[in-house]
Length: 108
Image (cartoon, rainbow, N blue to C red):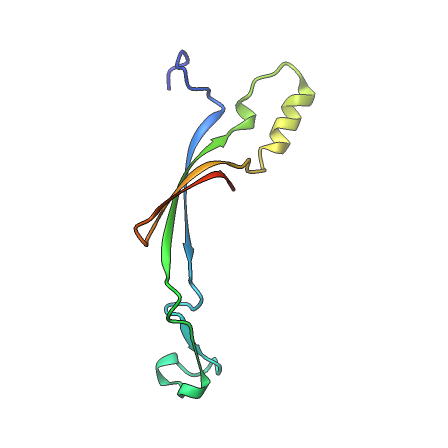
């Protein structure tokens, strides 16, 4: 990026992903006996949460790179470096596998 741009170098665009409704490894049902596959499990021993939808989530957000803030103070440089490990809540857009788009004013 050029140095004379209007976008501050400490403000980044960030992407991420997640998932929701993943109660089982591959499906949302399993057997109470871990040695038996869910397909071979007796109905009374099966735990069934197939009504819970499983879907992916993709996130687009702003992010602060505190280490990019230039100061002449060794103290503030150290503080910004230490604080950079903490994600600052920022506005976020979520695109999910249900076909919905959600906006969060503040999101981690």
